[in-house]
Image 1 (cartoon, rainbow, N blue to C red):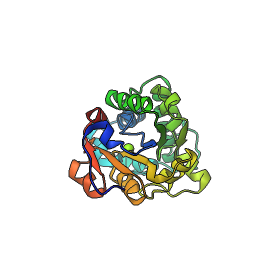
Image 2: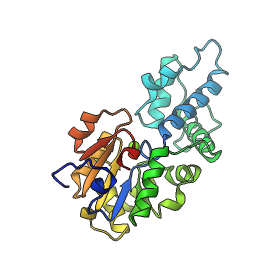
Image 3: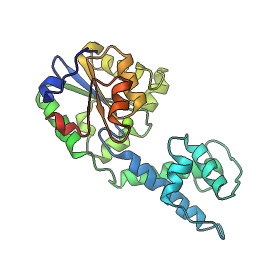
Length: 247
Ligand SMILES: [Mg+2]
């Protein structure tokens, strides 16, 4: 990483860079909102069949689901309504009213929303990506999500990113997830570049830590709620609210 933060626009942020490695969820697409909607749809449907159950509220997402592994979210939300369901097998049919069935149903709802074109990329991010391409930079996506190709397709971004290192690739290649820099380093290798020539763009603390832990040129933090100082403390070289600020 460079020691000197440079905030003088795109040229400064990308000085010496040959490639940009983008996180997906929260950097290119507001996919966290799609996850919220999918949970709402799941439990609106499920609770309709449960007599006297209090309806799903937006606050339930933050109180019981956000940030947890999917099946823990199902279990903890159900517990908030005093509902206990059988666990079911991990690959249980999404039609089954079990913890794993409901979790798999949520994933299906998420994918249905995505495939129906329900993902609009951040406008400022698209402009930044266009500008980077115009400068001849190589681009890659590095995401923990297993749904990355579907999300990129729904957002109309597939053609921008010939290299996608997502949750499926990480498992296949045996790469540890963020905050390890391994998935970002793997993306740089796939682009045929040393890490020192790559810029990492991240919105999550764990992702900024991943970029900071690797030997990358710089880490651009995008503050979607994590907090500017938090991202700087995690190792971001520069923090913006929107990537268009660097244009
Ligand atoms: Mg993210």
